[in-house]
Length: 176
Image 1 (cartoon, one colour):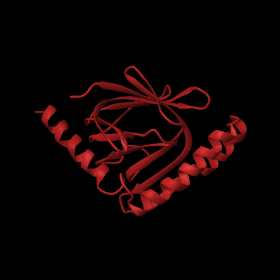
Image 2 (cartoon, one colour):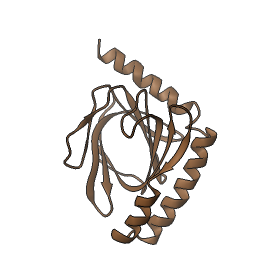
Image 3 (cartoon, rainbow, N blue to C red):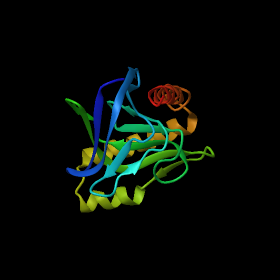
Image 4 (tube, rainbow, N blue to C red):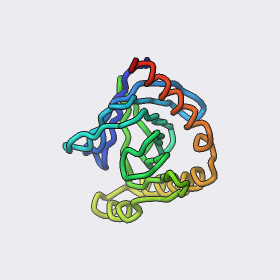
């Protein structure tokens, strides 16, 4: 198994959002892939942790987004892939930190692709004082990712699913 990595999502400017630990799975031209077996727990701020019921994979990019693939829905219902628009990731020993910028793109189990939380993004521009650089980067990434997911542009075609299948095999092997 790969090294454990703390996935540390924050809200602007620096408050806890989601935290969970995954294992390093590999790297390709899209970024660094992490995985979590069934039973991985994630905690949103100080809330009660949730448990991932099936293996998941998370792609950390050097762009304005990160994505997670799951065999079953984790958060917000029936989705297959979920993309968080974030300020580019910052790595430190044993952890990756990202500032969540509200906008999310997802593909549901029935194939629909949507952008979520545009109202929250607009509100936070005012209440949290997002700098223009964050607003522009998030909006451009959100629009681009909506199209990429809709069109199945890699890694949203077969690549993410292949990494998820690898995580499922690892999860099965570790549970024997």
